[in-house]
Image 1 (cartoon, rainbow, N blue to C red):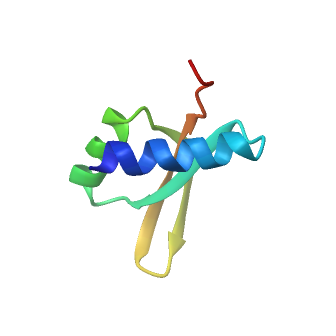
Image 2: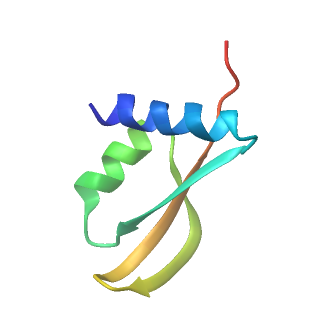
Length: 66
Protein backbone atom coordinates (compact mmCIF):
# COMPACT_ATOMS: atom_id res chain seq x y z
CA UNK A 1 0.00 0.00 0.00
CA UNK A 2 2.71 2.52 0.94
CA UNK A 3 4.56 1.63 -2.27
CA UNK A 4 1.59 2.68 -4.42
CA UNK A 5 1.11 5.90 -2.48
CA UNK A 6 4.76 6.90 -2.81
CA UNK A 7 4.83 5.94 -6.49
CA UNK A 8 1.77 8.14 -7.06
CA UNK A 9 3.55 11.00 -5.27
CA UNK A 10 6.60 10.42 -7.48
CA UNK A 11 4.44 10.50 -10.63
CA UNK A 12 2.88 13.77 -9.45
CA UNK A 13 6.30 15.26 -8.67
CA UNK A 14 7.78 14.08 -11.98
CA UNK A 15 4.92 15.74 -13.85
CA UNK A 16 5.89 19.02 -12.21
CA UNK A 17 9.56 18.73 -13.10
CA UNK A 18 10.79 17.77 -9.63
CA UNK A 19 13.70 15.37 -9.26
CA UNK A 20 13.52 14.35 -5.59
CA UNK A 21 10.94 13.41 -2.97
CA UNK A 22 11.61 14.22 0.68
CA UNK A 23 9.73 13.32 3.83
CA UNK A 24 10.16 13.68 7.57
CA UNK A 25 9.83 10.76 9.94
CA UNK A 26 10.04 10.60 13.71
CA UNK A 27 13.49 9.58 14.87
CA UNK A 28 12.02 6.93 17.20
CA UNK A 29 9.85 5.22 14.56
CA UNK A 30 12.07 2.48 13.07
CA UNK A 31 9.10 0.70 11.52
CA UNK A 32 8.19 3.73 9.38
CA UNK A 33 11.84 4.38 8.56
CA UNK A 34 12.17 0.77 7.40
CA UNK A 35 9.11 1.07 5.15
CA UNK A 36 10.50 4.24 3.59
CA UNK A 37 13.93 2.61 3.08
CA UNK A 38 12.23 -0.29 1.32
CA UNK A 39 10.71 2.29 -1.04
CA UNK A 40 14.11 3.81 -1.84
CA UNK A 41 14.34 6.62 0.72
CA UNK A 42 17.61 7.26 2.55
CA UNK A 43 18.40 9.69 5.36
CA UNK A 44 19.74 13.02 4.11
CA UNK A 45 21.56 13.77 7.36
CA UNK A 46 19.17 16.60 8.20
CA UNK A 47 17.51 16.32 11.60
CA UNK A 48 15.33 18.77 13.48
CA UNK A 49 12.75 18.99 16.22
CA UNK A 50 9.23 19.27 14.84
CA UNK A 51 5.83 19.52 16.51
CA UNK A 52 5.87 15.81 17.42
CA UNK A 53 9.52 15.66 18.48
CA UNK A 54 12.82 14.72 16.84
CA UNK A 55 12.54 14.19 13.09
CA UNK A 56 14.80 12.74 10.40
CA UNK A 57 14.58 13.87 6.78
CA UNK A 58 14.66 11.12 4.15
CA UNK A 59 14.77 11.47 0.36
CA UNK A 60 14.67 9.48 -2.86
CA UNK A 61 15.08 10.47 -6.48
CA UNK A 62 12.00 10.72 -8.66
CA UNK A 63 12.58 7.90 -11.09
CA UNK A 64 12.09 8.61 -14.78
CA UNK A 65 9.26 6.84 -16.56
CA UNK A 66 10.25 3.53 -18.12
